[in-house]
Image (cartoon, rainbow, N blue to C red; front, side, top):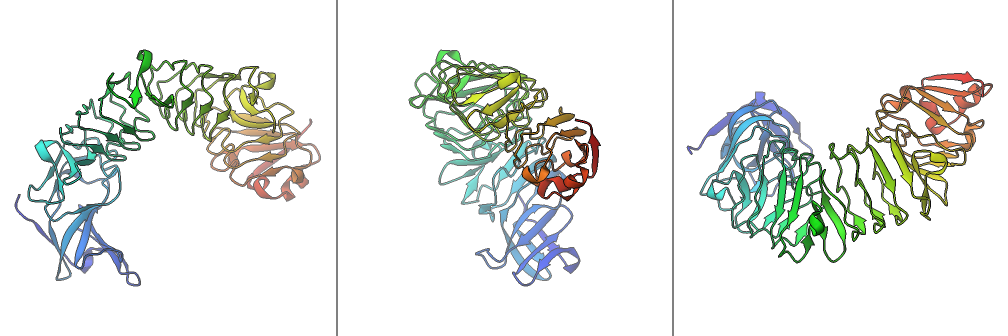
Length: 447
């Protein structure tokens, strides 16, 4: 492709910091930037001027800025530039800044790298960026065909590639990075070949259209035992990836971080008594309607069920020694500490609960009203953060100075709710510190 030179004057300057030697110039389509940490003289990175750029984008190999010629040595993120259709990268580019650089670029169909580029390539017309020497796939698009020589798919390589219809892993692939295919909602099936020995966290998180997950019978590290539509680490019995059709086998002991996160079509799932641990964000923002915590569960990580807007029923097996859902409260309570860990739209906080835990109702848009019992001593960070439809909070706490509320507990929407307090305590509430201070409207009620 013919080399293109772009000439920019001082009028194109959009940012400058003389103290650290950083600046940005824009030609309206691309932005050329330099920072003090760059190891090259007279070199810049190229990225989008804004996320409204469209069509075929050609990265030039050189730019002239205020009469000084600079070499384009790297590209920065094109995240959410969903109107671009193709990208050409010249031989001068030797560095890709960041991960998931094409996240949300739903219309990107073609990625072409100059054949004389010594560091990166798009071999076999694969429509991807590959580190030449390492055979690592850095970033792809909806038309990517993974070449037979690729050994590793990098972290976030296809993140939020919503229009990726299918993907075939050649036998050369050994590693699938963290969140490599997260948010690829159009994917229907995944088949893991025999040589894959490492699958990162959240590799298939948010693949909400995924109906089938299968691992080659010859794979020595992972399996899909009993046609469970999941990926299980064989030696540890940890479930590392699931889908809407997953049936968790009795042998699984742990659900890894983010396994079912963002899966809006997951409505119900049965947790067998073999499971002892549920990882961080395992079911966050999923479509779960109900969940039963079996007696075997000993550990539940942070935000395991946060953002589950459709969740209506939560119960804990009565034989569980660590957690309970006393009084049919539709919540998970840590028995020893009387701490409410997770709630839902139908939760009624029991009177003997003393702590509402961090992110217990985080971003639950179904909650319109909540009652805080008299015995509550603490409400932890983000407990009701993002509950944008929360309109009324009835506090039965008679002495708010003895009940600590973190300033973020009701922040972001929850602070717009009306706080109802016991008759005769309004002034005490108004003078209380910390999270009590954020409420704009306060009214007394008869208890």
